[in-house]
Image (cartoon, rainbow, N blue to C red; front, side, top):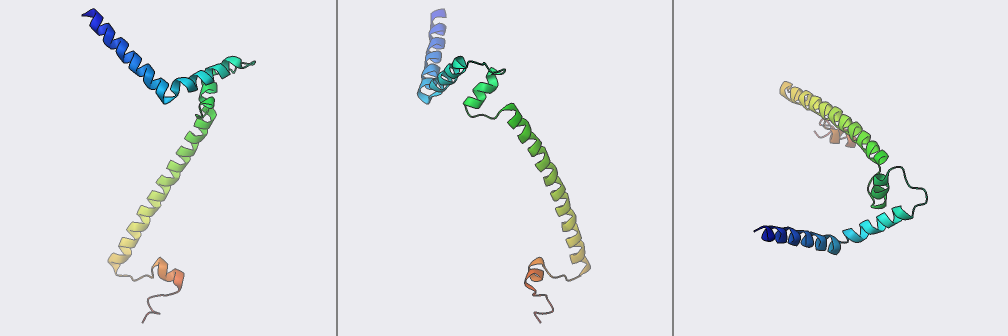
Length: 116
């Protein structure tokens, strides 16, 4: 029974190894690790070196993108609130029966009174 379980584990490991090899992961990792080994001045962060060589963002890139995301989220929330306020104002004007020229009419100079 123990041999069967061990054979299943070994089989899964071998299948995974073949998957990594066929997909090019092992080759890419080997190249990056050789490049790290050949560095005369070893980087302070081996993980950042590997991430950079594999094309991933650095920690500073990540922080910059995170800041940009927060800024854009704040801008989105502000624009959403403005949009909701304007929609309420528009509904109020419609409910009051006030006719206003549309944005398109204002842009073309074609006001409701000119159409009569």
